[in-house]
Length: 172
Image 1 (tube, one colour):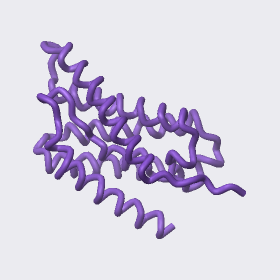
Image 2 (cartoon, helix red, strand yellow):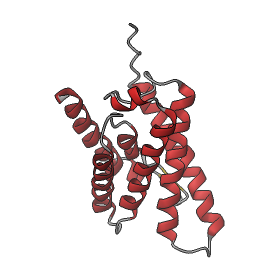
Image 3 (cartoon, rainbow, N blue to C red):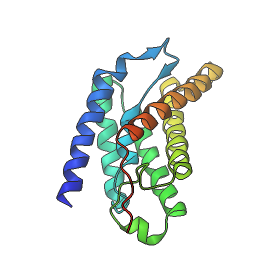
Image 4 (cartoon, rainbow, N blue to C red):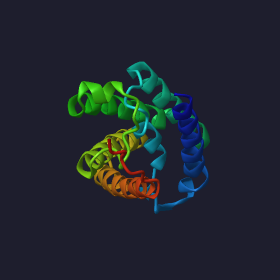
């Protein structure tokens, strides 16, 4: 259990650091931006209590908001992502898998489950993020284009991270 906690603390520091120092400066005319820090919320162990998932998502978003100088936009998007994560785990995983403390990584789950988990969660996060950021329907086409392109870019970056740190499933 202590090993899982240490891995998650290191993962949090690395992903937030990469988001703040690297991915904050990467973009394409304010149209495409990557937010791979949300991978931390995706990779929380499955047995994490719901209250703790919401609290971790809130603190993760608050940390990014403090560096981006935004007023709770990332926090709200991360809490929405936590709600999606809890719902998705509840409808797709069996009770034994939900109560165990394995990390839902590419090596432990099949590619279709992992891709749909990452893609739809990123879409929900980015929808909340960009709609709260614009808070207007005046330029809805630009906002929707930003949501779709940023979602695709973020999913590609997160899949590259997952492949880079791919660990084979232990066979019994």
